[in-house]
Image 1 (tube, rainbow, N blue to C red):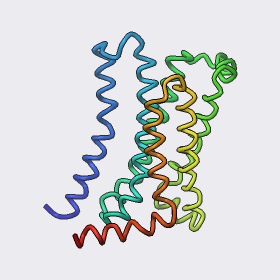
Image 2 (cartoon, rainbow, N blue to C red):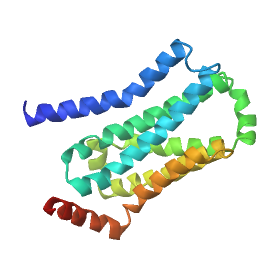
Image 3 (cartoon, rainbow, N blue to C red):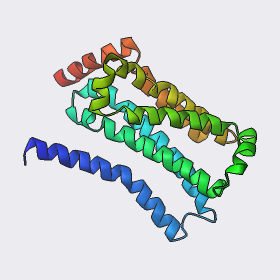
Image 4 (cartoon, rainbow, N blue to C red):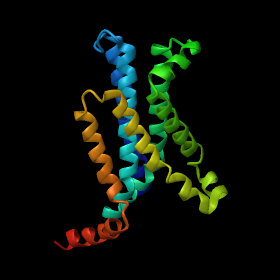
Length: 206
């Protein structure tokens, strides 16, 4: 097997792994294993799936610095687009199962649940990143591309705020995601980022 075929298998495996939760949830809904409210089941799980994908995407840069493995770089754009896909499915679940596609209800929903506005801001940010994730966009934007894609950090903050507002009665799960996000963001601090290659070299010598 050539190295090129190996990379294609790696990317294909990651794609299938990202798709697997959707297949599982569809099966659970079809077999009535999702509980009495399958719409709310899908709404919750697609939202958490989007958060998982965002955290995984943001973890790839420090992992690349720590290991120098090319494989993490090869799947970064894919996972970013999966983050957007899960977020869109989350909004679609809300529109279908909560609003019933009755957009007249949206105004009262925004008043009662302002966390929806926070979530929509995060979605708009993800859409901007998704629309500019191609090599063509990188060339067109030039030096502006990296500052634009640093929007991923405030987007993560918005997603966590949205989730906090939804589950504030029981914060155990939220704290787990917040700690993971804090650790990932800590690797962006210049002293930590500079230390990662030194950690790799120390481990390789051990």
